[in-house]
Image (cartoon, rainbow, N blue to C red; front, side, top):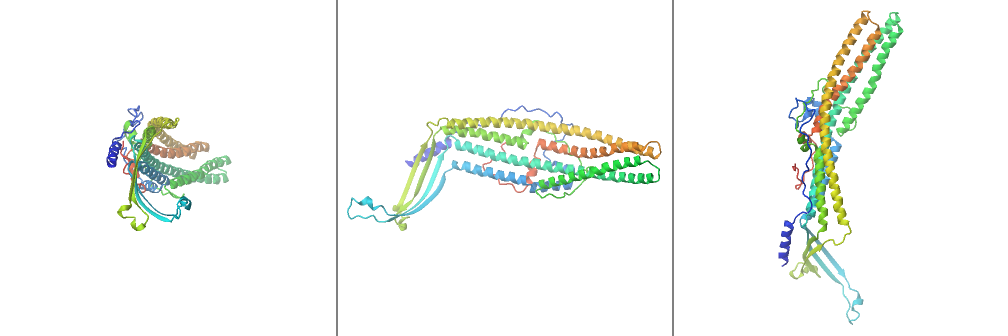
Length: 483
């Protein structure tokens, strides 16, 4: 009879429904195209874009960062924690088995036998050994909804880890480009300082022999000191950038190797992609959706508290007053218990939990929609910034060429006696900052392409993920390829 009841309850448990809403991806207003996507955009969103710079040193730095960065390791540990929680949450779906054993030596109180003359209680020993089993029948899906939420949390932490990787690769590339731009600015400043120093030396000699005025010497020295003052500032920025890259690599602050110059680095091609693809590429968008799925499942887990909780417990084992008889047939003992427990009056406790879960789901939905909108804005901003920076760099290149021509002609006129030295000084005052601005813009324009790849996400994040330290093994119940 008991066996039939157990089989019936198992069938009911397996056929039980899960209360609460099933998740459906919300309808989103997705733009059909990007406003600033250039015509030359190529379908290379999943490529390892940093290799397009054609700088082996940059490739090595990114590989080193992926293997040693501390934030990546923290994110990996967070994934392990989420998977451990999933294992704990889903465990009650299956019967729980255990064991117990005890040995007891006792002597009843003599006061219990005062009414019976001549009887004295004697000490006695009892031994027990039992195997136990318990199972909560998830008829209403409370445990399944909690498992669904925990599974979504695992996927969310995995996407958070991918987001850290996406950010890391971009930060290493951008800082390296900034570093190469600063290196060029330092080289320009030192070249200019050497040129201005030679001018000061010549003018001081000419002033000594009365060929030029002291004002001309002062003008030349002013230009020299201007270039000299720029060098320490640039050197300080170089040290700060090197230290930032070192931390990204997971190392102590120190020098960073260099590869190609800012002139030699090749600009990556612009990736092409439909806006709808962004929903399946950006780790932050996927993370926000997994958080929404988790909160949606918790509504069902809260609603299931309204229904009775049915559990089965049993024990089978041996009990005997003598250890040598413990495993003999007469010492057999067993128990089987079915328990039904449910709420009657909770005075709003369960209702409050359902309301809380529903409100959390609404907040998660708004967060998901906001993440999608922010993602599209990031792509639009990145594409427009790249386009406008390209235009600005082209204008700065023309300005630099004009400034060089102006400085050359002013020097020729001064040497020919057709113009005062103030004309040369004015030309140099325009050329020096124009060269520095060009180097800075060149670095920023290359970084803009990096920002485009970061904003679009893509399969390259998975390639970078494989270059990190060994990732934690994915739990069998985790639906990695949900989307």
